[in-house]
Image 1: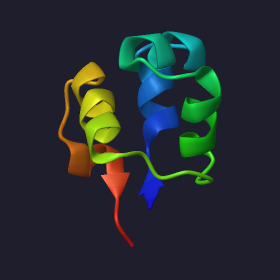
Image 2: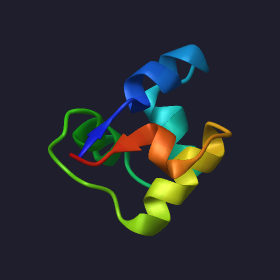
Image 3: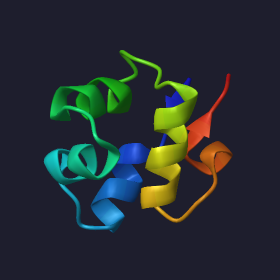
Length: 63
């Protein structure tokens, strides 16, 4: 699954650490998701979308 997390994170001026804290996960988790090494749980995907004030399907693209 592809995503635009890095683009959104930069647009919001967030570091991986800040995003991780907002979502209740480790910074390494955010890094792995951004680099397509890990697919988030449904719950985490919704948390990430909420931080960016957007819909899940606008952050994550299923291929």
